[in-house]
Image (cartoon, rainbow, N blue to C red; front, side, top):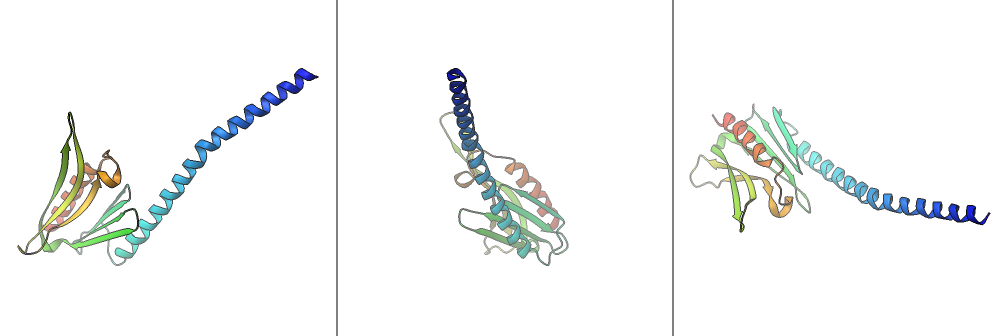
Length: 164
């Protein structure tokens, strides 16, 4: 009888330790997922308000950013989430002469790392300021690019087509 009781206690402690380990993994993941869903909902709400009357031809979402284009009205919309709030920009592409992808890099001892990827719009009027959409910022988005450079190139082509 004594041996059976000891085995039962060992099984209970094993189950308890297993439950604690599972909870230690699952709970943080659930909290991160909930935070991500809230962030995406806020971005989508801001985007809907910005593009309420637009006819969106192309749209793309990544890592807290949404970009879209209305080819009829020739407008480009950009929404992004920072630490505190959602921010949005919209531009009339007919007011801009060109757009280009600009990458900022820093050189380390043995590697070069991309610090920022932007889509920069140059105005037709010389005194007007350029506008930029920041697709990637290493300080805010981490140090690893996740396709932002390719996304910026794709959107440069979309916007350039509307500027013609």
